[in-house]
Length: 112
Length: 116
Image 1: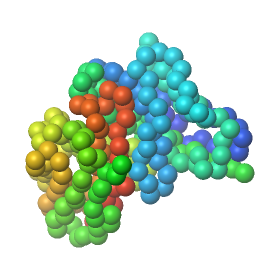
Image 2: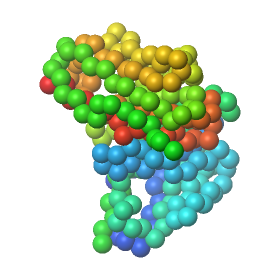
Image 3: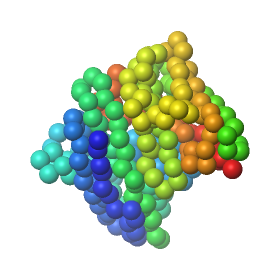
Image 4: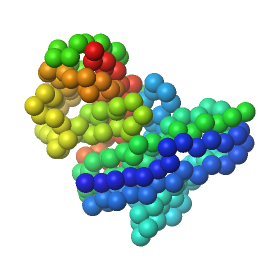
């Protein structure tokens, strides 16, 4: 099986920086993904880390430490539209066939 | 490029009734997933198809849930009979390659089921 832990809620103000942490326990770990989901909407892919280190995509960055079974999503220059749920998800399997398992999600509220 | 299509968007049924959800993945996507998302939780993988074959259905409650993917394109998820705890959003997702080894799945808007 697998388990993922992330904070249930985070709040911040516009323009601030927020970090959402994720720790995981799983066998056959292949990579860590992050998804954003607005209320009533579909989860949308944000980033993916298979190797240790930082991946940057615009205002969002994601970090992975495989030895610590830990990752985080960093959101900079927060905007109101960033208010949403954020999920970390582990990929298990191989490079050609795998499965994606999600955490319970972190509700981010951005205040003006 | 058209996204993942799902229908119906909303369904209300009474317990012990049956329901079916339909999914049409992005054209050319070989891998299709059904996830169940209960309010306030993350999506839970129910079943994964590779073309029209089942790769993983270990978390599918097979006594009441069934899924098929004929011809390796569209898929249908059925619940019969439904229970109150099946109230959730059923998300269909697809990926281009055989597995999520880029971690990226494309999700549909989901089918919201309420069981009374």
